[in-house]
Length: 358
Image (cartoon, rainbow, N blue to C red; front, side, top):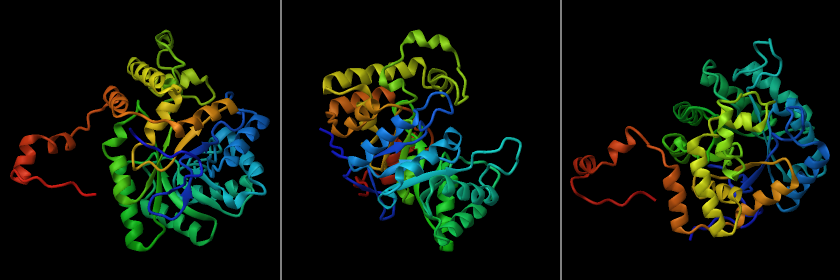
């Protein structure tokens, strides 16, 4: 039987830091309806209060979510309890179309975005600032020095990476360590039963370099909830426009596919056996990886939040976890597969059995 935490106030340390966060974090990408599919303020406040009242303390937003509405609502709801919350936000995404410096990873974008986020959040400091997505143009030293300056100024407490190649994140961590700059403590990546390619490099890197993994889209754009069927596959490739329908976004993300629905079928079977909903089983599965610190739940109604929080009570048998792992397995590729071949291990170890490191 596989065990996971039982409550939002069973806190975990975020990476190689002393910061304590809940095992499920409240995603604020749905805070506001500016994109056409989020929740309005009264419903959002109800969800926020329910999460915090149960001991939840980790809230995830970004400078561009619902065109800034998300950060403003988080700031409003945090009043009177700001210091007990761990508020994470992100910079990178362009906020003024046509302005070449309103987005990106560079220092001007970073400083401008943080000042605007502080104003919207109505706070003096950001607990965790992520680089939102790798832009492949900004020198890593510029990014790291900018992040360290923000920490030294007291405007940011911790820093992390999101949607960044493993080799760049590990390189940045090494440079920060050698130069005495603020270390990275978190890595936010897509991780779910449909997207397991991160197990090749990103998750092992995070474990080795001291970054707590914070998965986004744990339900694969809703596909793992079981709400889509093969009749929905006639949608084609969909559209990546965040203001489009959720079905369109799921198709554009590659989640709404034959493979995705095959995996969702097994999730549904396991959920029925375990006495839980498919969403609860899919969320619980992400928490089984020891590299994962906190999984982000993105909900639009109080009912969805209540259902998602039920993931903390899921118990999977070894057989159930094995079936989920098998149907969703991905090839690790070179050099991982080669290094596990019997011939390779014989050549490397000479027939000697060596226990793996703890």
